[in-house]
Structure formats: C-alpha cells, structure tokens
Image (cartoon, rainbow, N blue to C red; front, side, top):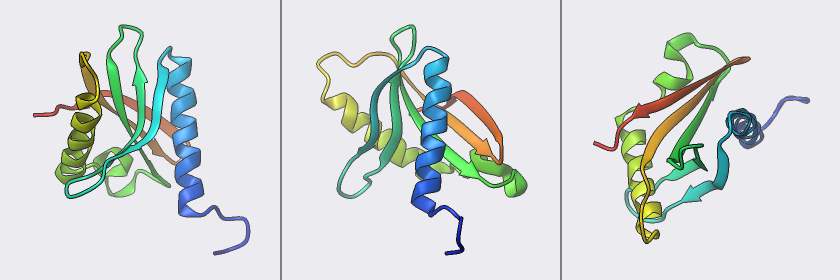
Length: 123
C-alpha cells in the first residue's frame, strides 16, 4: 500500500459515511448499519433507514474512482441484488409488522454522489 492511500475497507467506510450523511440531510433516520446474514445466499445491507413516510429503505452504497466502465451503479448486478433481497427478507422476518420498503442505491463516482431511489425491486 502506498503512503497516504486508503485501504479498501477505509474507503468503503468513508463512502458509507458520506452516503449516510447525505440521506440523513434529506430527512431519513438510521435504523442499522452493515446488517449481515449468514449462510448460503447471505448478504450484507450497507444502510437501513426510515424515510419520512415511514418506508424502510435498504441502501447499497457503491463507490468507484470514476464513471468509466458504467460507474458505481452499474456494478450492482443480478447476483448482488438477489443477496440484498435475501438479507432484507431476513431483516423483515424479525419484525412483527413489516412496513413498506424499497431498495435504494447511493452511487459515488469520484466526487459525484447520486442517490437512486427504488433502484430495483425484490421481484
């Protein structure tokens, strides 16, 4: 690792913190960070928040140094989406009355941050 460069984990943590600050500034409230499931098909949800209308929002944060090769948002393929849906179902199973929910993406390409609401559906 070159002096002054962030580790991959540190860069990911910084991207999540930036995304969280952006979403909280828009009025969303943090429920949980880095929710993980175990076992086959398991996954991780970077951020779980409540929107102002009480919708539960599962957020995937992706960061790329540039938008080349489709950018951060394009890197969330079908397999990643399936893992996010699986993890969300595990989280929702713990609740007595699951609320309305959606899957958002915060894509960070270099200095640009884009919040994509309802980026995909559970299907």
